[in-house]
Amino acid sequence: MILTKAQYDEIAQCLVSVPPTRQSLRKLKQRFPSQSQATLLSIFSQEYQKHIKRTHAKHHTSEAIESYYQRYLNGVGRNGAAPVLLELANEVDYAPSLMARIILERFLQEHEETPPSKSVINSMLRDPSQIPDGVLANQVYQCIVNDCCYGPLVDCIKHAIGHEHEVLLRDMLLEKNLSFLDEDQLRAKGYDKTPDFILQVPVAVEGHIIHWIESKASFGDECSHHAYLHDQFWSYWNRFGPGLVIYWYGFIQELDCNRERGILLKACFPTDIVTLCHSVPCP
Image 1 (cartoon, rainbow, N blue to C red):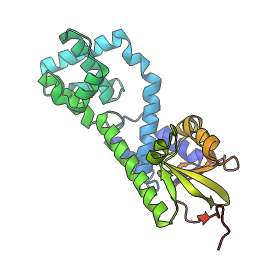
Image 2 (cartoon, rainbow, N blue to C red; image 1 turned 90 degrees about the horizontal axis):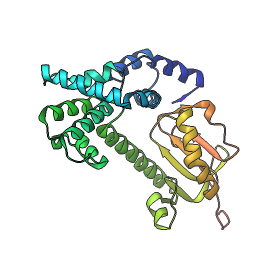
Image 3 (cartoon, helix red, strand yellow; image 1 turned 180 degrees about the vertical axis):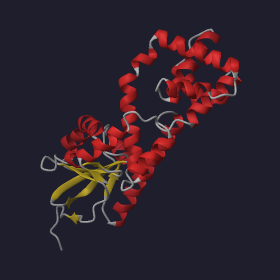
């Protein structure tokens, strides 16, 4: 799904004061019925992550942490089964999984002799049964399963979706009888930063030569695309030549402005691939 900047801004504007819940996503789908659920979810998640980055610091002052922790203790003191942490996160407009991390770290600082390591915290968030307090374990679990943008459950889902689309792209390349090297093969050859697939014989797509293809199981907005250009795509271009990026959930149309410089954007696998000759004459 390719959107104009104006269409994207209209969707993003609707998310300004919307909590990151599944109910909000359903309302968004009703508001924009012509957009796919996957595209809206990707935009929804990216916009919320931008919001969290902007407000992250204020939730991590010592005063804020202590206030949240005392409110947590008072809440579970009244009713340990109530979703105290989840409601607190929603009230202060912070991601439930990140609120759970704050409270868990504060709890362990109080009850453990040594400060908890990041790996210990991450392990407990992935498996709350490891938390040495049953009430807190339940509170953390509620936050993790009700967070649709952050947390270990979301990370696992995103990883699986990303891998699924890489496999899909691989199958399409094989179906077209295109020879390629994947990331693992390239790393075995000593490359440290590589696209998902290097084509051993370049192809032409819409009149543009393509040497590599990168799969992105997300929507290409300005923030993410510019970061990818800086961190990945131009590096690929410098090393391997011009290439193709597939944003499976769409992108902002105006971002597809580097075609002549060697980076082409598509929202699906191209259907008009022309295989080029390589070293030998065409039959």
